[in-house]
Length: 265
Image 1 (cartoon, rainbow, N blue to C red):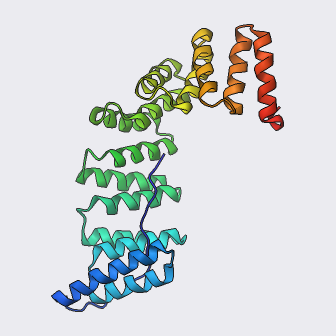
Image 2 (cartoon, rainbow, N blue to C red):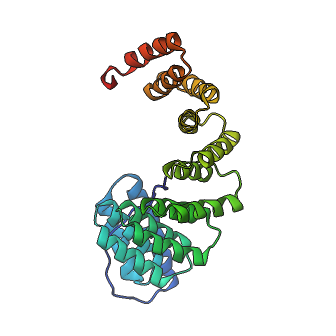
Image 3 (spheres, one colour):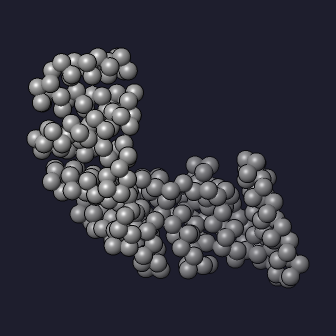
């Protein structure tokens, strides 16, 4: 449910030298070189270049930001957070610094910290769909389901046909055992993206649990057409066919499911 960070980087020094036009040009050249090292997965070389940039300008927010991301990718959560906070303290108007700090907190399972940073980012950019989406996911992980729904609903007010937000609201209602509302939002998602396999799977089961077997059969059949070799779609179709007393069809489908994944039976 969250975006990948596509930057690379690590530690710093605090000696500031005056920045002249030649230094600025050199800094840009170094940044370009660091990007090339990152693309070639030459992490140590990239670290050395970022340190050189900070030797030239120790208030370079972007370099602190990049160093924080690299540090996080190396598995050092605390130092990564400190570096991102340093970038934000220099420039608190760049939303991507906040966004990446949120992602680091989220990825490390620090959902409450992530929520705090998401809300700070929304003070800068209240309609940032990515931040609202990640906030909804973090609130879900904290089991603050109603607040999570509110975050996703804000997205839909900005972008009514946002597939993932619509689907997630359906999933939360499903989690709350509110099957009618889950059905409503799954159907809305299907309207936006008719061949969304995960929605078909969840909607089929929801319809079955509501006792709407004929509708469930239609959706589960569609799911097996979209993913004919999936053990899950075939298993769900067997469930619906059994509920409709189509035992012969259920047996045929069950045999196929067993062939696809014998260890599951």
